[in-house]
Length: 247
Ligand SMILES: Nc1ncnc2c1ncn2[C@@H]1O[C@H](COP(=O)(O)OP(=O)(O)O)[C@@H](O)[C@H]1O
Ligand SMILES: [Mg+2]
Image (tube, rainbow, N blue to C red; front, side):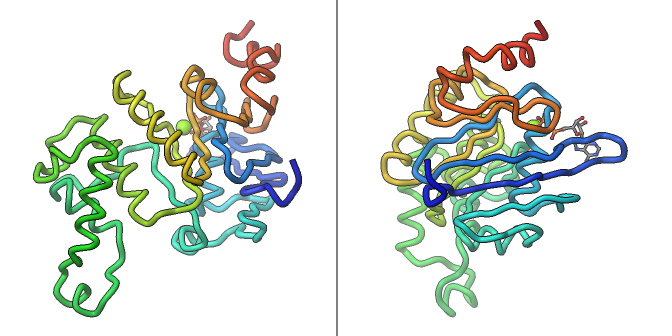
């Protein structure tokens, strides 16, 4: 694939914590219009990579290029404004707000009336309801977020990420701690949105999910890629089996 198709590129990305080289000179490429996957054993640096790319932590060295722009060390909100939607590995919802309110706070006020009145336009509320229906939790709109299940909170988090129509969405372990039927729902939604043009980078420990969902996969071990390619290519790579199974 050519550079024009690259949505995200890192070069020599490095981040250490004390003596731990969490991300260790990672050079990677992910592609526009694809469902990209980043996979690797626990502790292989996936979340640290994710946090460096989204601006949540500053890399020690290396560069991050998104949509052809060098965004290394940009603040997270600036990167988000440049067209990245993200979700967090740990569920971040506002526990005492209702499900619907959680969807609405994802959207910046668009008019002075909205800003001053802390209300949202009918259009925004309709969009929030439609998105809740899409992620399959519209029946819970009036429930407080703390009262819905962990899997449902992840769906809520995904829905609120999508409220801003990001062209590029990064998800860190969307399936972590989620029951199989909700994982299937997340997978279906990712496929649908990708068909509509959204690019994804999904960071996951769940190898089966990534293998069935992704077009392009990067496998991490000890903070750097050890294999790259289609599911079939990485699945049969002895280095990947070794990293996963320790054989
Ligand atoms: N804030 C931190 N402080 C110290 N060590 C950390 C921190 N975050 C991650 N690490 C270490 O960096 C390594 C990579 O962790 P992480 O990026 O969370 O991996 P993964 O998401 O693949 O499980 C691990 O050894 C982890 O213990
Ligand atoms: Mg992680």
